[in-house]
Amino acid sequence: MSRGGPEIQLPGSHPAIGGRFVATVQGDGIQLFDRDTLAPIAQVSAPGANAVAVSDNWLSYRASAAAGDAIHISSLANPAAPAPPFQVAAQGGAGQLSRPAVDGNFLLFGVATPQGSRIVQRVMGTRKHRALVRSGRVLLFDPSVKGRSFAYVRTDARRSRLMVRRRHGHGAGRVLFSLGRSKGVFGANALTDSLAYATILQPSSSNPDARIVGVGRRHPKRFRQRGPRGGGNHRF
Figure 1: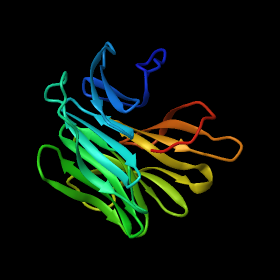
Figure 2 (figure 1 turned 60 degrees about the horizontal axis):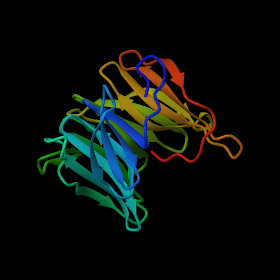
Figure 3 (figure 1 turned 60 degrees about the vertical axis):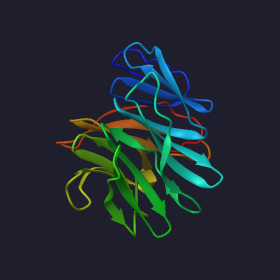
Figure 4 (figure 1 turned 120 degrees about the vertical axis):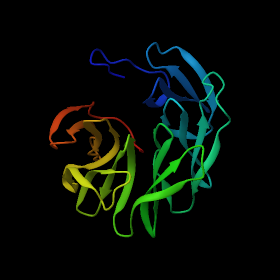
């Protein structure tokens, strides 16, 4: 984790930052920490968790099992004793769920199947859910959400595009950054009021590579990139 100074190594894996919390996967659970002090707050049982999102009100995670992917959520109304997680989405067979994204009470995730893909929004604490954008031809995946806007990755055979759109808008949205397949593909992303961050994957048999870039939302422009060369397998 970076606050503009030296990087801090967080305990565990698959870290997420949101609201007043930091969350990481440790063994078969997710550990919640205070964002400012990194003091442990609570642990949530989450077997198979491999992606996490958190806000002041909710924790969400994706877990994998033999039957496929599932998205779970847990209320943080009492952070010291989070509610037991319950499943809100599942996908088996050739289908896949993206990592979750959370802001306030809103949960977003991508669903990809052989028939097509879509970005789904769910209002946690209610039964309300809907597809924000869908396609039968290109892959729509890896959303992030901030306030009234969301970002996602739109990938076809030739290009990978980082998109942004209003949650109550229509259409595919606006392209913030576009990459030819020879230059890599976008993975996980994050959204702030003024910026979008995205991971660019450029794997090869000899040198797996990933880096993080930042793009201005008003005037798309790469302004920052960081990340070590090398590493292992990535799943976002």
